[in-house]
Image 1 (tube, rainbow, N blue to C red):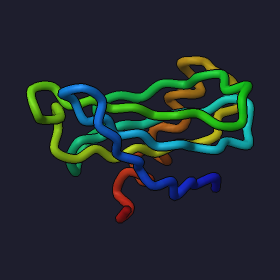
Image 2: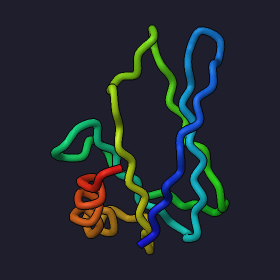
Image 3: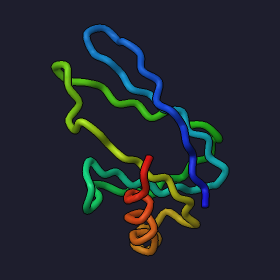
Length: 100
């Protein structure tokens, strides 16, 4: 299992605070799952990731994030197809249930 325990980096940007997290990947495609609370995921997608490091950025709007917390699960995917995304649904949901 490819789990990355990256820590977010916080930095001010104008009147907004920005949360950034650097993630190192060692596979060609990745499946990303997002969930703001326990229960079903809110969003998932598969992307080609030709680089080895990526930065996730979230910005506050009017002093707040849309959700007070957000879990992010990153899983390897063989191909970027709807079928591959469906095949990873159970593993993605399980990953989001784990404690951070």
